[in-house]
Image (cartoon, rainbow, N blue to C red; front, side, top):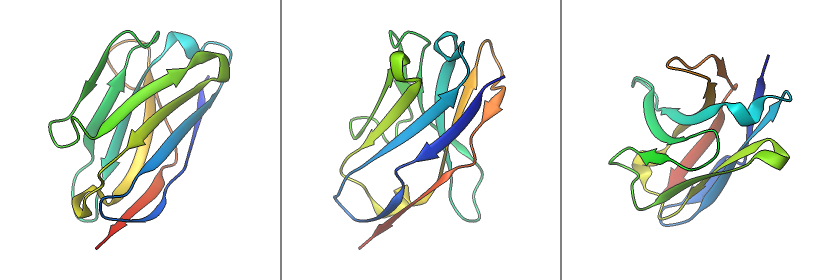
Length: 117
């Protein structure tokens, strides 16, 4: 069983930065790949970034590539999402999720990110 808790969201001006954290419980968290997703009001949830269990592989959606960086510290059971050059359209609830294979088995409760002009 893995429990995920996101933090680090908040209100930021366009062009600013935030770092989200996804803290996990469970001794086997280092065996899980992790994804970040987001959902804006009235829109479907969308993929943002992915990191493999050991951090050796990452991927990003085209909308955040070059601005966001995903990383992890397995000693701290934490995955991070560094978000730079934030845009108004980045406003959403951000979720982290963990998977061993194809499907994401565990989800956090989400953290709100609001980008203002």
